[in-house]
Length: 116
Image (cartoon, rainbow, N blue to C red; front, side, top):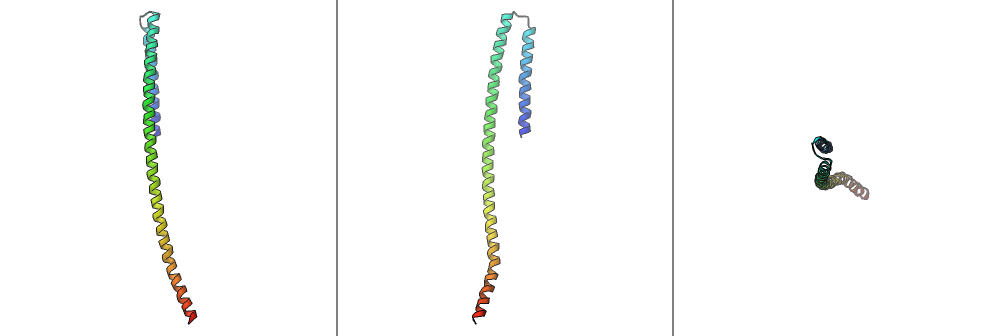
C-alpha cells in the first residue's frame, strides 16, 4: 500500500510540475504586454497554491482515515491474540491437571499401602 501511495505522490508532483511549466511557457509565449503577463502569472500562482493546498488537505484526510483504520485493525488483532492466548493457557492447564491426576492417585494409593 505504501508503494501505491508513493506512486500517487510522484504522479501528483509530476502533474503539478508539468502544469506549472506548461503554464509558464504558454504565458511567456503569449502575445501580451509584460504587465498583463505578470498579472496572469500572479493569478496562476495563486490558483496553483490553492489547488496544492486542497490536494494536501485531501491527502492528509486520507492519511488520517488510513491511520484510524490501521489502529482499529491492530486493536482487533490484539484482542484475537489475547483470546487465543487465554484458550491455549486453559488447554495447557487442562493437560497439566490431567497429567497430575494419575500421579496423585498413585501417590495416594502408595500412602494407603504404607499405612496398612
